[in-house]
Image (cartoon, rainbow, N blue to C red; front, top):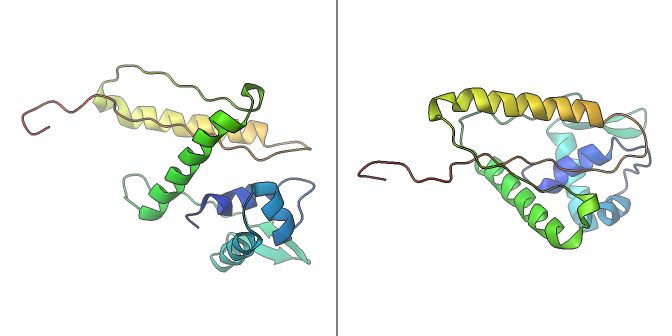
Length: 155
């Protein structure tokens, strides 16, 4: 499920007008119907979606990449999301998106605390704003990374 559209389909399934039809999904996400169909099958196979009373829906499971464990699937997913963000800069009006950032100096020893705060923020925002009706699927991606080069002889 490293493809961006796998998680977008799970989010799309939370919208009231969702149709578990690959053609409908492909039109909403701008992907090919075969990609939508394949993703739906994969999501069911790994237990992230299921058929309940004839309806296709996400399960209650969460996918959390364990911190500090490198994964090509996670890196691939984030590369795809960052590419989608770059496209949104050109394709979406500022009223439809928010792409901003803040640069600041941080003591590296406080990085674990900062990462916890970011995670809590994301959970709080998703919980607050994913309620209600007439929803569209958005992606909030926060990129925290070092801009400076490491100090030392071997850096």
